[in-house]
Image 1: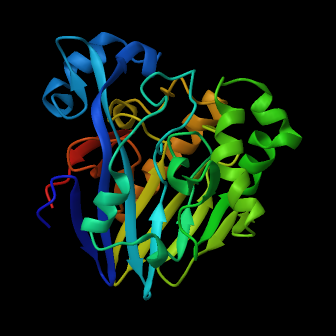
Image 2 (image 1 turned 135 degrees about the vertical axis):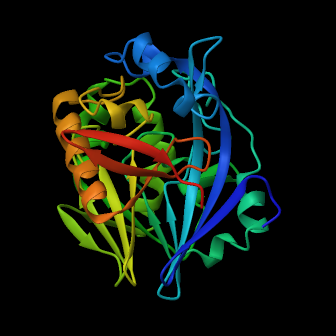
Length: 300
């Protein structure tokens, strides 16, 4: 791979490609993770700067990225970023964004028609944007052959029957209408709950808290393991302090309990942890020391 926005790793018989849509300082650290004070970031400066933290401005650095997983002869996308041309008045960084995401996919050898499965770990706007694209003024599925796997609890919460999330986030209705409803209309959605087996190597598991249906995708092949954790983690500081939830978690206490469960299993089984928004290599190892967790940047 020569594209700086594409990285790859292999776990057993599963190939994983990382497609970065955008990476930059995003928000003040206390705004993103309210319960982690500046002393936490300073204490772990060597781990956090510069891939996850800009010390001079005290800004958390985040990435928007999609993971391409090739497993069992199929191509699976894990989350689809922000997308282009979206009306997102609640977030200026994402509002009417224009980017080259599909070009980056193509340079990684993935055409829209090659995608068999799209996994949305949850239905926030920065995870579903490229579910669809604008064709002649109409939102249509970007991946015409794909089955879109969507957590049933999130679909109920963020869809019209749930009042588009009850108006908790300004852009939830717009996100559902332009990035989720069109794939429903195309008949390409499969709703799931609890545990869902994608194939012999990939398993979805509900970890509610960040959203009602927030999920992780586990990978296991020939003794090697990883877990795509979506927004269970936004920053490595939440590995050190799993009790600290992000400002976007709808149920912070439940999110913290789910985060601890995910980290405990990752440390026990040696799963690589792959969050939706980590910079650097995008991948972390987690080690257990007593009752605490230590994040270790994955070097490949």
